[in-house]
Image 1 (spheres, rainbow, N blue to C red):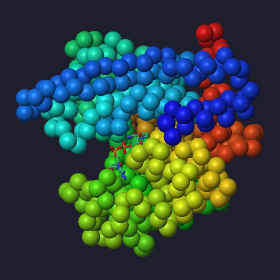
Image 2 (cartoon, protein in one colour):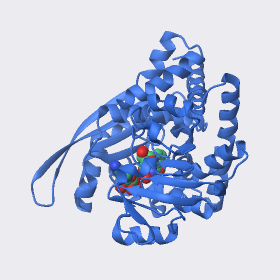
Image 3 (cartoon, rainbow, N blue to C red):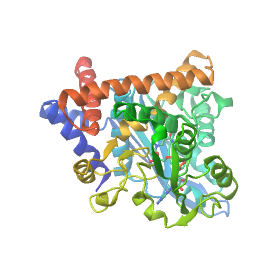
Length: 409
Ligand code: NAD
């Protein structure tokens, strides 16, 4: 399913529940602005290459727009548009004073040198620096980008507008990044999972976990759930998958991946085909790689009781219905992976205040935000007698709709 279709289906269920009128629905769905740019660079071998970059600014009624920049070969207009809308709903669920946006460049970062990636990032900034800013639209890292890329971004932006660390988040610490940003999405997932399990009278340590993706989010989730006593029984990445029903030694795996570049061949587990990760025997499945991986054709094969959506859009709406009938609880992406944008917000606040927080404060405030959002989510679920996904969308859409009306737009 096209990612915009999937996001909008969830939106429409919430809009109906909230009894929004046709005009409001149209206004909330229509992006504020869409930018598409040509990014041509010279490759290291002297040849020219042209890439297409996007920034879609979805909504700004609750504050400056916020969302990552993705470097991936599948980046296209529809994907970026869906992810931009998801950011609007995500910032609203956790009640940050932001709207939503997303950007990306269709490229294969793993096949490019660091110098080529730097040139590409700088050209992208040159093409759209006038349309982002500390109080308008604040990018951040996403799949295929990292603190290093944000460092190049803030430097290129400074050439046009002067030093403005608040224009992007997820920066290196030395350039105004926040302590705790690196682990924030995985940590927010842990705090959200604690709330979910508590509401079922259970704890993180009671369960086994399978994790798809071992990049920023997946590897931090593995570390943090492991530290809290959870047993990580299977992980995968683009190069392979490994499992150990007795539990993987996660710190050793992290060290192994740092040297080898992937999980394949880790001696503390048995290798298996990476496309079988989703169907492994486990209590909790954490998709932390790509969107659309759980769909109507494979939802019946999932063996987990819980799915924590660390990635954006990993479960399609048709699969949601099948999973719900089978009693699988899905912690929806717009809540589950909101830890990253929440600590991005803390970074922005620190940049505006020119005051650095201790790491412990970042973790404490993140936990507080995730718990407070969980309470709002639970109240909405009880009020409408619906799934957590519908509750998350209803909570978010009602907040954005109210802000839009109050601004009189
Ligand atoms: P990343 O680039 O650091 O890692 C992605 C991981 O997915 C890598 O380990 C890669 O090998 C793996 N992968 C790619 N294709 C795969 C496949 N077919 N099968 C198995 N593994 C595969 O990206 P990330 O920052 O960890 O983001 C992961 C997901 O989380 C994305 O959907 C992203 O949008 C979402 N997300 C990230 C953040 C953040 O703060 N980084 C915040 C919110 C949501």
